[in-house]
Length: 336
Ligand code: UD1
Image (cartoon, rainbow, N blue to C red; front, side, top):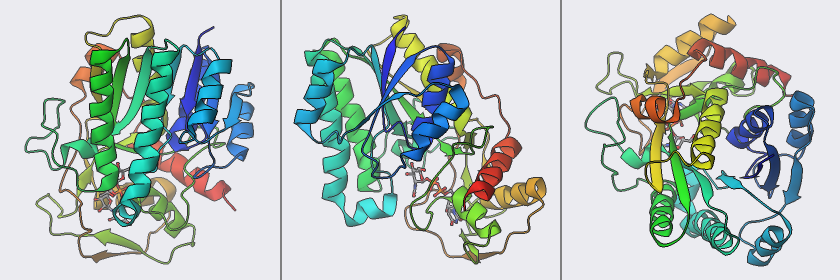
């Protein structure tokens, strides 16, 4: 049985990926510092899969702890989620973002080199493309200067990994996520935003639940059919499965290059108003919303060309937008 380390394995995408890994027959060990996640998630993963992953409450910035972990655990591959991800916060605290996201990545890669571990999956983001000149966005679309320190940590992270692949025995895949939403069908794990949600779907579900008074729609003067911005919303379980496909590609040594990157989205764009109406339709909840000004740093439209992921990873999405929205709502209703 291959043993896979999942950093940030109690977070939103991490926890769903742990479930898929266990169901695919991998042994999972989680490192998480609980900075933006809850320990209960560990029990909830066990409720779904009947297997409790091994768990280490470690901070990857602590080089000594990380070294001790690798001296005492034999690992076949790493999926690295652990990172700070709030765009606005990263603008206010750039050094914290660089320290957390970059140092932890470098320490992990050093331990991989020193312990002869060669398979690495990195959480990247479609934010690296900025406003792409052509839609849908292929992997050939150029990487644009980052709009925020958070986005920059994804770009720099990819560069660090690429350089390490050249120098060492590392093989790596960066997955450039579009907009992950939804919850596991068991409704035992889902997204747990800290404080006021910054992302659209948790803001919508909290508004429907009465926790927030009103949803603000950031701009209706974009150059899109209804004037609101377009994104590619992907069910988190589909996204989790892309990690298993990428990991398997590395374990089977089927990768064409030592460093590869793939877009992970559905290929379909939805506007903010389309999302609101689809949510209302699928949940029979009326949403209180108003149009306000644009949010700084937002692009007009971003959706993926998924051809490369489909053909090389042999992966495609299986769930619909309606299923994703419904599961997000079911998850919201379970929160007290
Ligand atoms: C955001 C980040 C992106 C990050 C991703 C991670 C920004 C600028 N980008 O993507 O770098 O990788 O989250 O999850 O923050 N919207 C509203 N009202 C709201 C919230 C959002 O109208 O209350 C709109 C936004 O303007 C956008 C769309 O909904 O058009 C999606 O927003 P969001 O869920 O925050 O995702 P992104 O901005 O695409």
